[in-house]
Image (cartoon, rainbow, N blue to C red; front, side, top):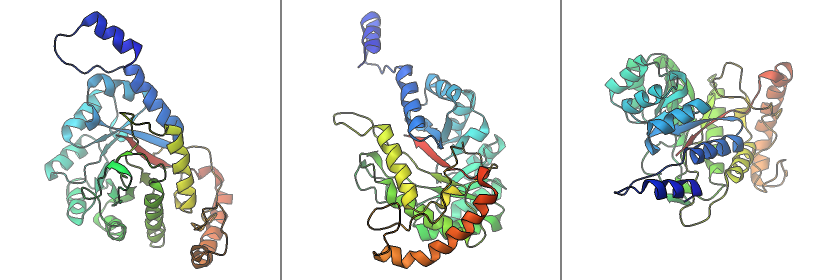
Length: 318
């Protein structure tokens, strides 16, 4: 409890139990995460707390919103968010709810099954879709590995199917589990996402978004790492994944950061953990030939269009 809330309780002396929130703390938490992930757009999960005061504050600060229902979409719009700042992140939705969201201007939808993908195609033509993949949830106090998501190989096949259904195969999402204290938990998920990016690029489909999910913990009884620690770990994780996410263009809706200027093959996910390949471990030997070819092609494009390259990730506060 901070001094501001203590003063409020002392002066008001509420007669019944109540929840008191300090909007300055909310703003500070949002700003800390935004600064820790400067190349990202932050999506606040409305289900965490849909209080109009919180939504209005975050909308004014430029936050985007992740919604799980039509009611939450209406709440975000009423708070001042525009439709292009709202994601319908529930992977299991009623057909009528997808249609309603589409009519309200929502164009970004999550899915993790063929049935859901086909529903979106039927009532939300041309929408951007992103597929949620499974993660182990190891290290989280509340793993979500059995709740949502599909295997990466299935995600690849479903995203490859999307253009044929009239949809924009837009990206990949995952969630490493709630109250995730392991700052390295994002590494494997980013590596899986990178593989999907590469496989689809080989088929002529260029994904544009990685949704980092939630999982960033808050302090209850135990100390937790700072947002900055998570930001550094996630940045290192996407570099280790050989970063096909670097190939972004000015047409992407995600907020750009400074051009990283990194070729796609700067690392080969070296087992020794270095930023450059050691050339000795099995991972480096197996990937060197393919990664060098990809790097050469990427550098050619990058040199001719360097201002269009940027790191881009989507993230949610949960």
